[in-house]
Image 1: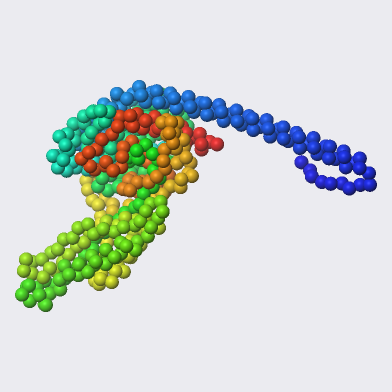
Image 2 (image 1 turned 90 degrees about the vertical axis):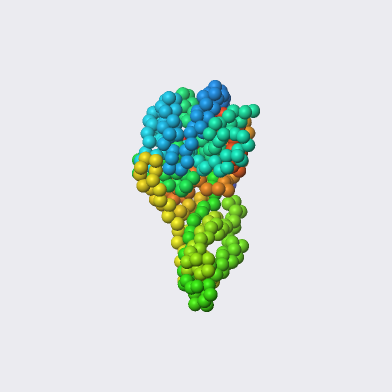
Length: 451
């Protein structure tokens, strides 16, 4: 379109010019109006198609309720403490094969892996299937933590929230994805990961770096109460080693007490906690002296060595390097040494595994396509818009996004505060909603990416 003004002695040329311009503007306006109407019609059709998909997904999730509940009860009934997951892994693999996964395998460190589809958008649902111990059996109020009863619409048992309900729901979500052909644009991986309770992200890191699986996006099965979580604080476990000199208590002046040196360090650590950084979303960094051990020749000797264990929670901007330097800079440290703890174990497969106990902070932007696709999918599945928030505890996201930079969120049934408690339960209605929500996330994500 050309814009201009021609000033002449006669008005006819000017009138003709503006008449043509007005017709041009009118034609452009009609075109824009028609285009907008076409786009609105297309959006309406897309909305109707998406709603039809959501309605069908909810219907199938409800249809599969009994099967999902039984599968969940089966895997909760199998004890699966860290490095002892073999039996539950084999039970999960059997269910994946039964519902029609395209590929099922177990990797070198004991993760169980199922694949549906072979599309260009690769999304992984990760659910750790190891659990903490049961504590005092008497504190379970008469319930057996490995005999998951269905009472008043709830299933009780160790690991039902953290996070075997997510394992069961994503297996059946993948079944629905295949059944309805919703995964044509996606490769959907469903993983039951091992050893998370002992060392977050260890086996996920192995899976992605060594097993030929590199997802574009990850959805974690840690409990979110069916909301969307997009990050959490990191942490690092450290040990301070303090040296003294032994002497008989009757001649204590000849010794150097490692215990007294440790006491001064502990007071400085307490003060350090008060001045650590704060983030509006993730919260404050913290430091806790969680355990101390003292070495002494006898109860009437000056202690010659001490060690202090530290749990350091990291907020945005804090790293393992900054955490170490803070400790080294304490006035009381003197010749004491600080280092990051190492985790070493043998997986149930017999493979030796090890990693430093540093678990990076991670946050995914709220406007990221994965977050927004999950919000849309879950709202379609449940009829209510989920909250977008963060965990207080740590997850395998320390590996997927913290170390590897893969966009990661969390979506799963269950309350975070019930994890590791003797009152761990899941609502069956939430389990069904989790199946529907997880089934809609890949399709919704692929559609948004295609825009």
